[in-house]
Length: 360
Image 1 (cartoon, rainbow, N blue to C red):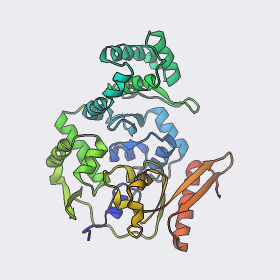
Image 2 (image 1 turned 90 degrees about the horizontal axis):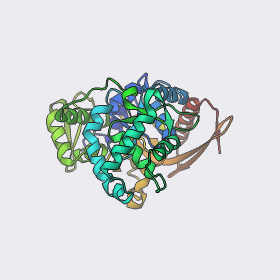
Image 3 (image 1 turned 45 degrees about the vertical axis):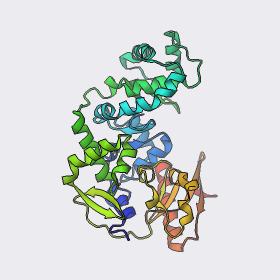
Image 4 (image 1 turned 180 degrees about the vertical axis):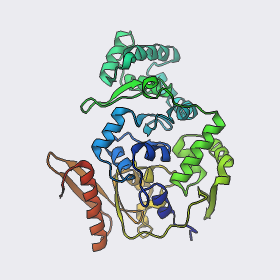
């Protein structure tokens, strides 16, 4: 039997339960980085860890550069803070570049071309300009860099992000823009590599623990050797718990949390609570082992309904002009208390959007 209640500790350490933050910067900084390829869902992920920020508040944070959205760690978008972006990129970008090398060769993208494309992007974005993907693709085309190959522009832009040259700008309507990193994070600090490994390790286990070295390696994109090196550097500030044959690490000051009442959470796809672990079995309902079938591995990455930290269903939402239409797909019968908790969670989501909730 587990010596600790893993889901409950994670809920509190990820600030889905317990004390909340006031600003997006505090949330993203505490967690280190937050997966954000689904922009709408990622905003809700941040807001659930605050005292009541809205969708508009999160748009404003991206627009003013309080938080940035860029490729870092695994080859997907994450929210990061301007204070952390440079040392995070220095630490994790080499692995992301290595992962993309084969595809880049297929697209005819080599170091000489990236040097040219980076120069063209810097020229296009100088003097504070913020341009959309299509506008930057046109600028690259004018510089003699062919954009007629499938996904070429996406990879060129990602490489410029990984090289620490560009990052997110504000949105223009529903379109994302890019800006120069030097203008969005001019004073961002750098760290020696060991310090960066230690810093990211400590942030991960304090905000995501209990977790294993394998979990951290998966989340960060670092090697297992680096993950273990990071643990060796910070383990004096962490606590070890043995569950089965695995060592789990969490904050030394983390007091045993009481099992929560049936509080419901409606998580977006790719929330850190579900996505940030190599082993996601802790989020599944032990009473329904069929959920652990490998064919359902993607379940944890969908929009999930949690009761006491375990997945009991998934949910969908359709944002309309005057309301948000909610659909619930439970995987088991729900008690009346659980149904009320889910209704309350849905009302919180409606408040986040500034819309009343209508159930399908």
